[in-house]
Amino acid sequence: MRAIVYTEKGPSSVLRLVDRPVPEPGVGEVRVKLVVAGVNPTDVKSRSGAAARGDHDEVTPGQDGAGTVDAVGIGVEGLAVGDRVWLYLAQHGQPHGTAAEYVTVPAERAVRLPDTVTGPEAFDLGAALGVPAITAHRALTSGPVARLSPGSLAGLHVLVHGGAGAVGNAAIQLARWAGASVIATVSSDEKGALARAAGAHHVVDYKHTDAAAGIRDAAPDGVDLIVEVAPAVNNELDQKVVKTGATIAFYANNGGDQLVLDIRPTFSLGLRYQGLLLYTLAPELLEAAVADVSAAVAAGVLKVGEEHGLPLHRFPLDETAAAHDAVDGGAVGKVLIQI
Image 1: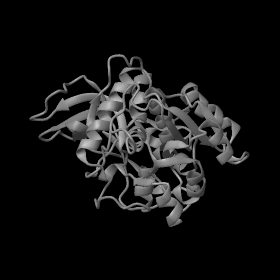
Image 2: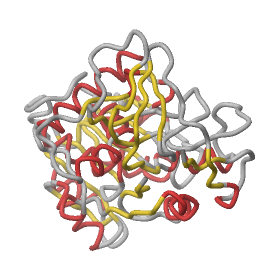
Image 3: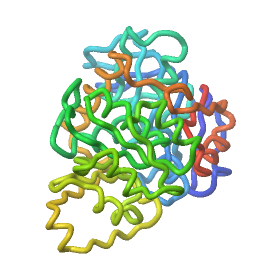
């Protein structure tokens, strides 16, 4: 099979296209013939050395992807050859990920695509779920509710920073499905159009307007939950717009690595700061996220493409390095590898 590998950390030029044997699934594993793979910042950071995860002689990157079950290992129940699936955390804990024609994963990391998702775009959606959708789910369930379903966030105001990003897009769609009033921040009119396409009720351009005033106009009593991508730079703004007892769920360090808290207003507001990283989530949290995301997909409320606020950027497998560069360069939307 064709696979992308690297044997040392570094720039995207360390990625090589090679031929490797088709892997055999072990006990409790399935083998998936991939159609599309997703590329996330975590893949780029792991390859570059900015985030060290695992120590393998040769790595095929890629946590997310979608394709068809091709072989089933001993002890696997609930999946069969021919099932269409989306994958999450495919490369976590093992050297091979989704930038290849085939991958083997623990069966629980291969999730059947609902029959309601049809056509070739089904694999685009499947490859775009994984890291962004599960991250968004965990952020949205870090506050008043533990699960997402229609109406579960009814009456609440959710603020999504970075509404044009992949996690932001998933958070907007999931929060709206759950009944929240959704406010998104963006840095341009173009990104504002994407956040609205995703379903945001209110969009605030933080670069060209008074962001605090705009958010307060949409949520006069304050927001209940913030999905935060840049806590180091946004904390002052966040504290101006939260309701007492709000949760700030942060999943990245965009804009800086140090968050300095002014203690009295922080405890006076009763704020909860919830950090989250997929690789350290408890199994029950991952299971809940997968179940709720799958329900949202089946309901037709999680979608991709520019018309849904998430433009797709496609690269062939042999141009995986360019795909990594696109993510590293801040491509707006979702970067996919067509296997």
